[in-house]
Image (cartoon, rainbow, N blue to C red; front, side, top):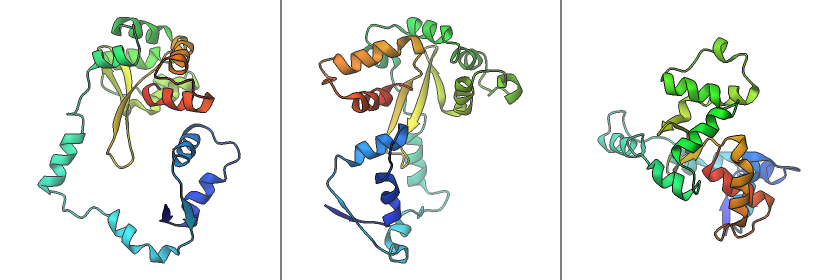
Length: 200
């Protein structure tokens, strides 16, 4: 398969020496496809440029309906999440583990008590990990008292709820992801990638 795109768009990505995190996941996703990069001048990409523009007016009923459909009105059952992703854990057990995790506890307590994001002064003395959760405040939601992160793809076509995983549960989740019948004994990177789809 051949895709025409700006050479800089993927060239830099594929030439990473030691990719980590999101970059590693992108590279892993790209490796599933057989493609070659061809150089094409940026001025020749007018067709793709036009596709990235929103064609409708602000009050377009079609767009507003689509935005409602893929917005927060689309909810997910926490019970399904806790049984399929977390195995035997109940919502109470997960919440207890989150409250015992010193990096998650301050954010969970604030979310339980108020919808308003705490000020930087309030969160300032907290750990760097807690500050990262604070930065994600608008993406964090409570479901049955359990903290989740709402992840959405760049184009809005996919939405996923990721459990904010307490440190104490990481070994169990990694072991389950790697060793389960559906896990398939993946290598380190694939196990990590599969885990990151469901947990944050």
